[in-house]
Length: 181
Figure 1 (spheres, rainbow, N blue to C red):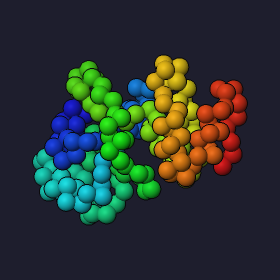
Figure 2: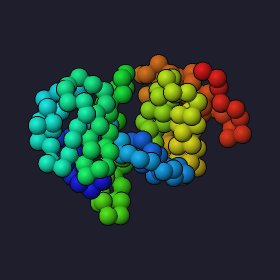
Figure 3: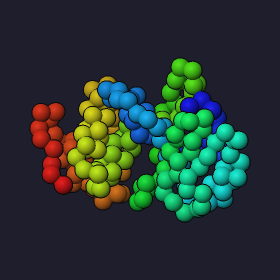
């Protein structure tokens, strides 16, 4: 992970750790087989430079430009570079990141709990209720620590046109059932 972050930050200094590794910072930890980073894949020049300068022991798939996800394999470790379709990456998203010091890795930039929950809500539209549960976990544990800005979360949900679902998630008790999509 340390090598991946060091390499990635040369090309995407505003990267954000997302996925289960980020979720593990905000909620009950789960195992994962990869490390996911949100980066601006719309910047094709930057992506092209990264692809041309891979370390010798690395591979990237796919090998052409224009995708929303790339798999980078560094010494057998899978690192996914993603910018989900329809996700609006703004300066505010980047400015709200958290800097976390991970043992044996160092400082790493983690997406805010609000934007991580939003990513799970958006993913649930295609992948289903499991991602809603992940969003709810991030929300509940962050809110319990007084580390969740509901107004910002709802603003982002509105921008992504998923506000009814987000309002329902906020209003659910832990024992309530999840809405059927």
